[in-house]
Structure formats: C-alpha cells, structure tokens
Amino acid sequence: MMMSMRFFAYIALFCLILLSACSNRYESENLGIYQENSSRRNIADGVWYVTQSFISNGGPAEYNIHIPYIKLNNERAEFAINEAIHELIIAPASLSEFRPGVGMLEIDYGIMHVNNELMSIHFSGFSGGWWGTNDIQKTITVDLQNGNILTLGDFFTYEEMEEIILIAMISDRAALTDSTFNQEPARSQYLNYLKAHFSEQLHNGQLLLSAHNFYIKDGVVGLIGLPFPSIRHHAIVEIDVGQIPRVTP
Image (cartoon, rainbow, N blue to C red; front, top):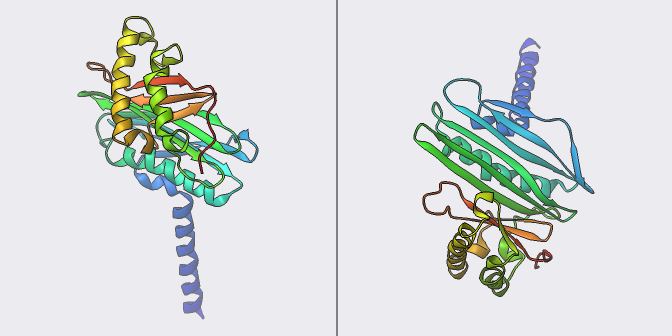
C-alpha cells in the first residue's frame, strides 16, 4: 500500500513539473527574468494581447526584450502567431544576436495596424557592446483568421510593387522615418539609394517573398532597407499607397 501511494506521489510530482515547464514556454530560453504584463489590451473584436518581457538578472550582460502575446478566440491561429513571433525574436535573441556575459540587447515593439483580419507588428532595437552596436529591425504581419504569416506578395503584385518603387517612392508620397534624412538633398540621395536596393530585391524575388521586411498601417506600407553607406542603422521608408489591398487568396 505504501509503495502504491509513493508511486502515485511520484507520478503527481512529475505531472506538476511537466505542467510547469509547458506553461513557462518562453522561460526556457536562458534569457533571465521573465515577466508578463497582466493588463489585457483589447485592440479589435476578439483580439487582445499582453506584453511578455525578458529582462537580464544582473551581471555584465544586459538585455530588455518585449514582445506581444496575442490572444484570439481561434486557438490554432493564436498558437501559430505566437510561435512565429517567438521564432522571430526570442529564439535568435538567445542564440545568435546576444552573447551571454557580454554586451547588451534591447528589443521593443509597436503594433502598426490591426483589425479583425490582420495585424502588423514592427520590432526595433539594438545589440552590441564595446565593439559597437547593430541595429535590429524586424516585422511580422499575420492573418488573424488562420494564423498565416503574410508576405508583401500577399498584398501587392509584381507590377504594383514596381510602380510603388519606381514612382511613389521618389515622390511626396514617400517619407523616411529617420527625420535626419527628410531634408534635401539627403532625402533624394537616400531614396534613390533605396529605390535601387528595393528594385534589385523585387527583380530577384526577395521583396515579395519575405515576411519580415515590411509593415502596413493606415494606407501606408513601410519597407525596411539596407543602411545607407557609413550609417549603421537600417533605412525605413513609409509609402502612401492610398489603401492597403485585401490579402489575395
């Protein structure tokens, strides 16, 4: 009888440990203190989120990472979206973009667009140390109905993007998010540089297929490009396209 009770006690303990490990999915990344902001933010019908934070626990290394945890009525879509965010931000942070014991890493996010169908998120920050800093700019746009990760090609055809790059980008419909370069002649030089960069990406297929080089917001598409020579941070240009088209089937 005693052996039977002890056996069931071990089984119960094992289940508790397993449950704890599963419920702390993101704490297994060796990123120090994990926190979850319990204040729920409703952003659309049936769509809300909380902020998950990973903060260093002292020592020579410092990091401060914040990501949204999206809550949906559709559990499958919710799981797929949060897994994709984890793979984009947390997994690289724990493996390649941050060296434990040295340097610092900061990543935060902004929700650029959300409705009952779509959400577009922009992550920004930096990593570095005594050797210098590296700019971090990543994006993800998701279909809230099915959890699919969307690419620029889900919104625009090749011909439409070609027109956006060749015409709209060098007009008053384009704005650089870094105000330093919104004055002439720096603005024209930078936009021409990005025009060549995005044209090359469009022609080799990378621009429309990538899921992490753009965001959408209020009739604007934001494109993340290469840093201008001698400048360490990425270039982001926001282009007024009038209305974001519906995702193509």
